[in-house]
Amino acid sequence: MTDLTFAELNLSQPILQALTDMGFEEPTPVQEKCIPPLLQQKDVVGQAQTGTGKTAAFGIPLVQQTDISIKEVQTIIMCPTRELAIQVTGELIKIGKHLDGLHVVPVYGGQSISRQIKALKRGAHVVVGTPGRTIDHLRRGTMKLDHLQRVVFDEADEMLNMGFRDDMEQILSYASQPVQTIMFSATMSKGIRKIMNRYMDNPETVAIERKKMTAPNIEQYVVEVRDSVRTEAICRFMDINDFKLALVFCNTKRKTEKVSRELRSRGYSSDFINGDLSQNQRDRVMGKFRSGAIDILVGTDVAARGLDIDDIEAVFNYDIPQDPEYYVHRIGRTGRAGRSGMAITFSTKSKKKQLRTIERQIKNQLNPLDLPSTADVQKSRLAGEMDGLVEVLEKGNLRPFIDQIESFTDDRFTTVEIAAALLKKRTEAPDQQEEAAGENGQSQSHNYDDSAMVRMHFNVGKKNNVYPGDLVGAIAGESNVPGNVIGNIDIFPHHSFVDIPGKHVKQVLDIMNRNRVKGKKIRVKVA
Ligand SMILES: Nc1ncnc2c1ncn2[C@@H]1O[C@H](COP(=O)(O)OP(=O)(O)OP(=O)(O)O)[C@@H](O)[C@H]1O
Ligand SMILES: [Mg+2]
Image (tube, rainbow, N blue to C red; front, top):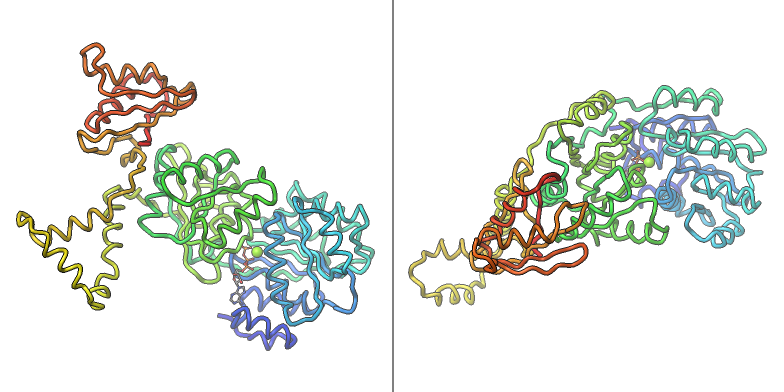
């Protein structure tokens, strides 16, 4: 709760109108504290938890102070990623909606520079950029900072990290007069604070301190599972909690592709984002995620800071972030603007130390949580099916269904058993199912109907330490009668498929795992 209203913050009518249009009823604490000194042209350092409105905290005053009649760049806002530059641009355009002629231009790599040159030529008042492309425009002379009055570093601690600091100094060197310097982030270590002060003149520091660095409405859990079970674990948590959108963080680009592929192979709509993608691909993936066309986005830390997507209800740390501050930003993609969210970090015994470092940093303990069993998932799936049953019954018009049930004349079964069978039929797991890893990550085979033919899919080759010869042995070994194999096998360069009756699935799996000299337990996919 804050004391002041937006109207008491000396904001112009067009901006007040825009804030109402955006559904902003009252300023958040960081907005209430930062807007007045920013309107007085002071340098400001603003620190507040993720999802608490820092963008509008700097956006509102800078839009209000923009002189539309001067068709020159008066503000530049620097962001660490392209997606964030695009998002901040969108928020500023909304804030300036009723200011005719306000021109906010995003400049970032991966987008055609000629398009940006054209937009700048039309006279940009505010530029929101990533450092590389901003310097590019300054060097070419397609962007000038002769009228620059203020610079904003969003995710300032990241912008002043080794990677960006030189760029920032270069950009500031193009300003022909001292400018108002504004720095915002959810995380600001003491070291970074010292560096910030080098660029600022007696800044007003606003820190919306909380005991904990992470947003209070995010439930934070740690789940101890074998690495090979993490994707399965994500699926079970998705099923049990019926999350709308989820974000999964991996520490490497390659893993983002692998995990996203594993999720898709289990029937979940997923895609991945990392720095190797072209800008068009990144825009497309972000668009699909924001629109809900995909439920699970798997990303590297390129997606960790600043991104504001309403329906992210869960964040999974597939890998524990190397940098504890990134833990704060990653989980801050959920639980925004007062909404609740869930953050689940996967860990193993050997990663305990890393976890402790993070808990110290965020001054918070992660709650241990068990991996839901397949029975738990099934139970929640069944419970989900029962939701809304009363409405259907109350709505009536059941005659055709009642006739159907009454026409089912097999009197060996009671009506309850028939209803249960219908429910079972409706909630059978999809045909494509991966070997469900057991509670401790040991593979266990589903019980398939004995005689039903099952097509088991094995990734073969050195990496998987599975060879077609092993498979031939496995499907012949147990039958002991030479030539009398229990199934047949299709061998391809990287995959082999074994077609066998359901009753032999476990047997083949056991032989394959028993004969293995190294490598993880085999998990087979039923193709
Ligand atoms: N006064 C307000 N009232 C209601 N919603 C708001 C208000 N200010 C901002 N929001 C909304 O809150 C969400 C989070 O805002 P924003 O992205 O600026 O957070 P942030 O503090 O920058 O987070 P992060 O540290 O992750 O970058 C956005 O959807 C924004 O529209
Ligand atoms: Mg932000």
